[in-house]
Image (cartoon, rainbow, N blue to C red; front, side):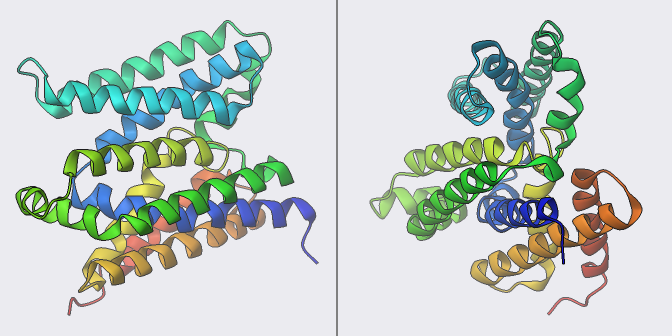
Length: 262
């Protein structure tokens, strides 16, 4: 019989692992990995604000992640000659640095900082599991409903415009969904590893997939196996759970690269 904390951890891990690929495939297709990094790094500032204002961590992280994501999207449109990757690098590391400084001024917060950076999935409560699954279902429903328009805008924005779609609106929806995922995943894998959970399962599934839908399904399978495998690895080896989940996903990525493409 599994311990109660392992059941909670498994449910929380699966909630994030099967949701991340819905966004991860678009992150890979649109080459938005650094965008996800910048949003995730800003989450630490959200943690500091939550602790300072005595708000639920999810609320502060989601708020800051949304502001950061929308700011990046706006600045990308009117950036003064700066390449997008340079702009994202400045914002990502700037937000992380400010967040770490803010957390250092909070009494007792230093002891919990590692949990927010690398996750503490073994400490999630049943209320955390409920929040994660509620957010996960919201993301899946929204992305599922907008799947075809998001796909069209990704493949050919001009075609999307001519078809009466609005690629800018779809990008904002994707951006807000990414911000929500960051808030959900911070307790599972932490701010520094969230992008890995977005990118690695989708990248691992890409060589095996002929269609976008098959790539999504394969990425979900890789994410789920990574979550459960990482928890088993953590339990057996007494290793950190969040990094263990990412390590298993990297191992799966390497193994799947050996499978001949069809």
